[in-house]
Length: 193
Image: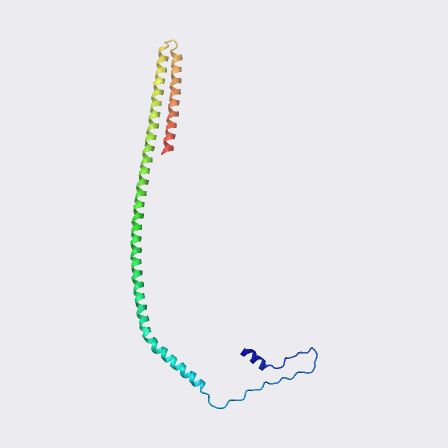
């Protein structure tokens, strides 16, 4: 409300702008307020009340400052104690977690070694079984070869030359069979090692 009144006092006549030169309006100055004469006690009373209020605030707050400082120190000590407690609990938790992790690691190492030994033993058994089968096959082939040689010898002297050739053929066939079987066994063993 005060602003609108002040605005009204500043400008009493609106300005007009013309596109063509014409009569220019004259501005009138608002009447200035005449200076007041005499002493006013209102500012002195306000200043005295302000000084009295400041003094009262200062005197009443000095006792509270000590209380607030003591309360702040108490809260600080409480916070430090809680922080120390949480730090110790965290360290204890870290140690227990570390021990659990080490135990799990040891268990995993043991199980890995156990599985490694089991796999190695299974591989060794497989190799031995393959070798035994190959040896059996070689023995059977030798027995069959010897039987063929014996039967060739038994056919008679007239057929001796023919039987000798057959015996040699049978030996070669059986030797080739033995070589094939041995190479298969060796390949199978190499796959498993």
